Image 1 (tube, rainbow, N blue to C red):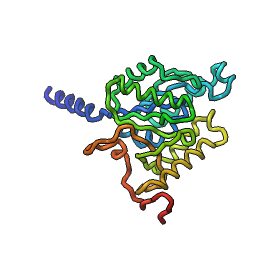
Image 2: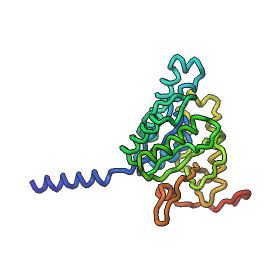
Image 3: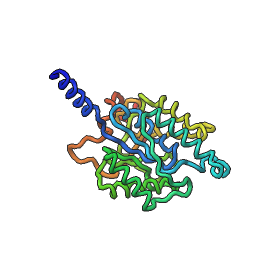
Image 4: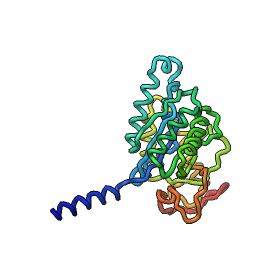
Amino acid sequence: MKKMLVVALAACMGGIALAKEKVVIVPAHPDDLISTIGFCLLARNTFEVHVIDFTHGERGLGLEGFTNGVAKATRIKEEESVCAAVGATLHWLDEVDGDAYACRETCWRLADLLKELRPRAVFGHWPVDIHGDHMMAGATLMKAVFLAEITPEFYFFEEEYQSKAFVPDHYLDIGSVRERKYEIVRMYKCQYRDGGIERRHRAAEMYHGMHTAMLASGQAEAFKSLFPVLQGQRSIFQELQPTSRGKPKFQGARVR
């Protein structure tokens, strides 16, 4: 009997030890997750990642695909496959692609999810963006965090040519998972088309890697914090960042 109690106690303690802090990412459309796929792959063993899509990307295949529902069904299936590949749990907020708003109901829906999840960190769109859905998704996340009365680490991610005046203050070396990232990116088949989406993101990662000191691979995803990490606190990036083996790189110069 005593042995059984010891085993049960050990199992309970093991369950507590295995509990992971949560991370929430809120993309406007399914393929917007691309900006954080490297992060997801590096975080999956340490954190429980949740993706909460603002819309289903219903207009991503033109008017016919929108009206007959094919685009929505296709993009839901693709996002489910991508989230399974990166080890993330998928949720939807059901705003309409191209007609999305940071309305009261959606802000509260997201706030209720955040209250339930109590994330260590949240990631959303940089709100200065040429795509209205991106702006609305970023604004909704900021409002929802306020409504949920939580204080997570809050980071914005970049849409490589749509975000404006985006100046990162956190970089994540994704060299170890970069090729796996782009295997997953190609799972967005309906959006991949001529491969331009991959070329643009690879170029952005090289740019950020060249302008960042002490990254091992020179390939980085970039993020901007809403709230500064206080002295004595460790950011989520400090926990995930591999030990650097590279030489410092500075703007305007290549270090050989």
